[in-house]
Each structure stands twice: as C-alpha cells, then as structure tokens.
Length: 266
Image (cartoon, rainbow, N blue to C red):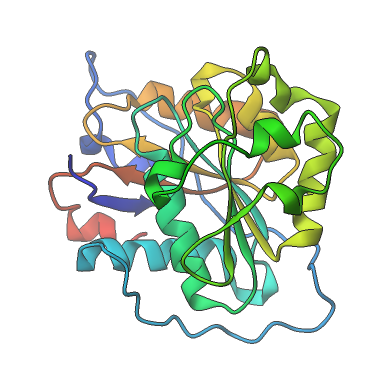
C-alpha cells in the first residue's frame, strides 16, 4: 500500500486530487494561518533547525513529514502547537501511520518529551506502528484515577512515549466523552511537552471534535482517489463550526505527483 502523501494548505485548489461520482463542485478556500496560543513555558523558544531524519521512509516522505512538523509545531512567532489531534475524514486514510511518523519526526528534532496517544478505541493501530503490545493504555487509564505516567510505554527514543489504546472492555468506546478524559488531557500536557492524539475518523462521531476542542487543533488526513471533496468540505465545516482549528491537511496514499504550480502554494 502506498504511503506517499502531500501537505495541502488550500482544499479549494486541488480539484484533481479527489474522485467524485458527480461533476466537480466549487470548494471554499481553507487557509491555515497560525493563531496565537498560550505558550507552555515562559521563556522564548529559539528557532528550530530541522535535523536530518533517519526513519524508514522514502526521501519524499521524510521531506513532507518535516514540513508538517515545522508548520504545526514550530510556526513563526512562537505560535507552535503543543497538543495536536490527527484525524481522518473516514477510516482507512492512514491516520495512524501519519500520526506515528509525525511523533517520531518531532521527537527526533527536539530534546523535549513527546507522547503519542491512541484514542481510536474502535480501531486502534498505533501499537502496531511502533511494534509494541496493546494491553495497558488509554482505556485502562480512563477507568481509574491513577497517574497517566503508569500507563505509557517508552519507545525507541528516550523522549518518545506511547499511550496505547489499552485493553478492550465493555463500554470502553464511550469513554472518550467522559469527564475523566477531559481531566486526562491537561494531565498529559503537564507530564509531556508535546502530545499527539490519533483520533477516530470524523464521520464516526463527535469524539474528534471533543478532543480538538481540548487541544490546539486538528491535522486532517485525506486519502487520494478516495476522499470525496464533499466529505472533506463537511469535515472542515464541522470543525470550524465547533471552533476547532484546522492546523493542516495531508493527502495520503498519493500515487501521482502534485503539479508544481500547486506544490509551490503549500
């Protein structure tokens, strides 16, 4: 399965990237401009020089991942995000792969701690991306009041941690909307410098919107030749209506090059 992808800044200018059963419809522009957020630390954060990645990805994939890291976490003016939700418009978009690679790339660029959270309780996938077991994680943490540090697993990098989905229990799929989940999110922010959340697809419910409201925004993952423009446009509308920032969009599973005229606008 292809893992090629491109970042998109304006969903209204990439008509040829989506397959639809009907004639093309105009799409309103979606401009991702960084908005001020409250900094975690009081001291000024120096400009980050992006390092060379040594992850198992093609060169083009590394470049795109680093662009996304730079755009989301190191925006000019100190407006980078600290807690980010990654979600697809529908299942099968490769959201977990993008989220895992994004977390690895971020951890490779900073000495700060990074925690990636599998909040897709219906179809968890982050543990497979990192090659670890999924037996003790978010679903377990949401049913007790114990500190979240007891549920995370340190990965290959000393500053990278995973809070996997955890054991499937009866009713666990409803836990994301619980008060305990709202308490857990700020706890994660206190424990880790950066938090990335792999969320359920938007079309499967309101969980991603709830998570996005408690984070600094959402990175939207679309699938080339599968995600419909209407679906993408509705996803953006739903997020904006709920006052959730869209930090960027990723066109995943791309099998053809993006035209240079469009690529220069990213």
